[in-house]
View 1: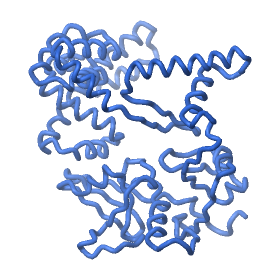
View 2 (view 1 turned 180 degrees about the horizontal axis):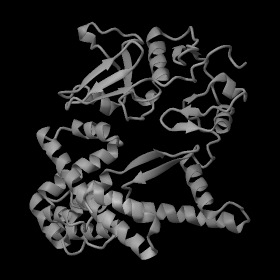
View 3 (view 1 turned 135 degrees about the horizontal axis):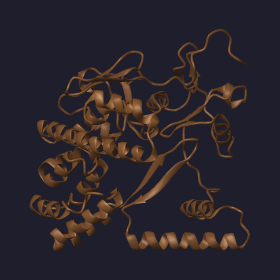
View 4 (view 1 turned 60 degrees about the vertical axis):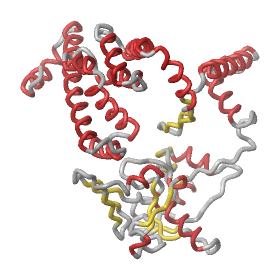
Length: 398
């Protein structure tokens, strides 16, 4: 089922399938997708080869395939691994027996091995991967890697534990997740047991929250000093027009680095006891920031703050790092007569700031604040600072 005609034929018949045939069609499609993913991995590996393994390949793939950087990086790394160190796993993909996600698990689990040991692990896995889900594949690949290099396994475990970090991922409707990544397994297990024990104790005392809610609340309370955040102050940037703040409309509220919040939740956060409100003057026709309404602070600090308020997030298309944690850069380099003003400054996260200097990357900032990025393959991507409110016509609603 590889041709478009066959796909159209199956699509037309899907509505009349029984349960057995529905499962069979889903299996056939999954096998076809695996074969296509194998082609994509080869193409990404070839791109990396042509670029000499440059780090900027990840950003180029992310922008052209419309992916987040982390996932794009995993695809590129997996493509390189499959074409150089894991040929049997790649062959299983060609046969439709292993999907792309499972192949990523194999690549990640064997990434620390030498090329020679990777080939050994790949051979051990050939008969163990088909008809396994991704978690089973991960465990099998991890076991094969340790078998292929017993002495290196201890060193690898030590190095992985050195890479522990805290990760935040943004969700929808005013929620986010925080995770300790690659923490020492004994500490993570002990921490979870302590949180669960305290949650169970509260539950037994009559607390009406669910166990999931209790565990989450206790973990956050502990992270905030055990006081539930009462004495903690955290800086976040909410973008809300006056009409929404006053309850005269319910336009979504933007939180830099997170995304949009419902108006009521935005008003709840903005009404906190330690909230500091900032007046921002906008162009009523475009909604773009024009002034922060401030006459104090040194010019340099005011200019930097204006640029970050205007940009909200890292300006490289596809990156959502909050601007207040980004670096500022001259669109026209200082040594080439660039000026330190709002027309020439733009916000980039540290990674994308470095990307500007990679060969073949061209950045152009237009007078309206639009940033156009041209990749080494000649593709262009444009980002424009989002307006603080919808462009207005006629008289304001208040």
